[in-house]
Length: 474
Image: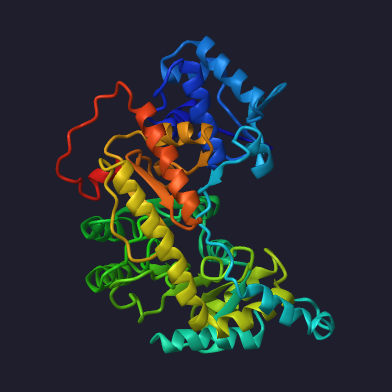
């Protein structure tokens, strides 16, 4: 059965949609962006034309023309009795609207570590022994869990293999944790902006999200965090404290102490996402946060080695690992042996791999920041020492309009609101620096031209003091 989106909910998602003329084109573009960002899921019934027109304060003719344009580009289909329903586009279908020669910066994933094909070839040489097994393991190979546990212990987090479960990537780990620990209407504290697929996971579990602002310059809003823990007593608090996605911020000792104390007082469990923790580019980052406490930790090899190596893990106390193991059979039957064999060899070589990744990301970051400073000096570009992206402040709430214009000219990005929990972030744009240097330079050229078009005739505010984290949400 299709889910249904109310007119009020769609208006909230659209935000400042009328950034170009004619109005029906601007409305169609706004809905396209929501579909491409997956903020409107496939097979979602859109509001009736008359209902949406009333909510937006436009004529029904405008909405009808927008829906007609969306049908023409394959974003929606009209079904008798269901109205207009969004289609599952996929990357191939989306490319019919996208420029075929475009630059895709929606996925902030570095290319594979160059040594990976050799490791895969080594594992393939032992295929006979691999295929003699069942082919998958619900908890994870002992050798791989021991290697992951050893890395935690070296980092000052004493860990034994019994405290580790291997998963099919970090996203799978988050889904398993949410399905096991959360019940409908449970509250989950989460950063905003944040990793959007995590927010989707908790919403799908029926949770109510409580946002705490984090800013590339100011860090986490500690007053809001303490109030949120005290007021809502969340079951879980999802944090990405090391090179936070998308801001690139590293949590200080003071910040992590405040969160740990507030979580303890509220009876909440911290869920620490470490998928970007190893992506240090240069400079100081401070000590690792949350090295003590009964927290749940999630990691993966997706960013540090290759997104196609779908190996992640959960590090938690033994009792929770046993609960997760018991619950997992209703989600899947385990992680494939082949990927685990590759991962075991890769984890043993991470000290060799990570410097190469650091150099790759440093080149991308430096190329991107230099090009932005030259082409768009009015934008505020934060200084980051790791992670995968820049969380750029535009100075005007035009992120969605900018992304739509750039998309038409071959550059595919996600607008700031994609990373919001409770709306907003139209003044921000996430620009990953994981692509090749020449593609990043081309991307900035496209952004410069798009920004000039989007701001033509717009009275931009004069430069002034940078907003606080709470102000930056708008």
